Length: 184
Length: 258
Image (cartoon, rainbow over all chains, first blue to last red; front, side, top):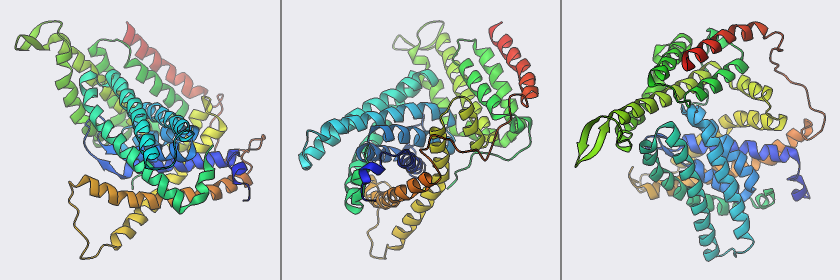
């Protein structure tokens, strides 16, 4: 595989990457659960995988992996009624995170300050999209009172997401350097 | 890790074509967002509950109800303060806290959420995930998207086994001198968990090129689409089920809107 950039342009590679990332998002969501927010039932680490997908693979793969992965996690976890909402909210979250990361990446340097600015901007983007998305959906499904209870849990989930996502990105790049060519 | 939602059975719902079930799922879900009276909501809910008992059994249908029970309580407690119209039953410092409109709305929302929960649960309990993907394909999902979803289904148990194996390997490294981490020490637990997740992620990401090559060898990316292993019934074969489903739709529409 001499020209890895070209390899990532193929449909086979993109399908494989999104399928594996979606499975990772599902497992990170289902395997690690902290029961706090009553409306979603638990706080999970699915966002760590979505942030990772956005940082390493780009907006399109983060959109599909975030959407498909969390929808499957809801189906497996017995929260099937939330699956369509999770698909759109987490999909949009991943997509915008990928775009914001692309924009920052072209301006910021890869030092501590650059990583901090990247993390903060991505955290704000991810939190606004996810918390407001679930809140709006919650207003229609369970009413404003119960939907409000969920907001703090979603913020905590995003704090874990951005921290874990950045650590994972740096660790995986170090352990498996070819991953830098996987972005499209 | 539990990754299967389908419950083996031979009920009418199990045997019904997944496309018809998917149509009913969307149709009945939409009905819960139409402004109907609360009694009609609970009538539809009763029908869904009865279908669930018939196809999966009483104890199985109670499972999702138990999961969402705390949320139903929250809806009943937190919805009334948002509504001040109607007869006031309870006021705190002169501010209406429980009114007839608030009570009505909380029953409305609880019925809607319970209905949606049961609908999705019964659908997934009586439909194999492969059939669900085929039904989505019938309704316009592209070949590439359905391949992506099928591969995800295939990879979930694989990534799960990597996660469990890595978790066990990390536990094996613990010695008698290893520091004890309290259940409530979230930062330390998170840090420890991250090392496991990093190993899982590296192994999973490394498997992508091999999977991509396998897909390419199978012809993915070519313009001529490959054949299918599983096929659904043709619309002609489905005629009987479609004709039998129509009176149900008619009854539900008449019950809801007249």
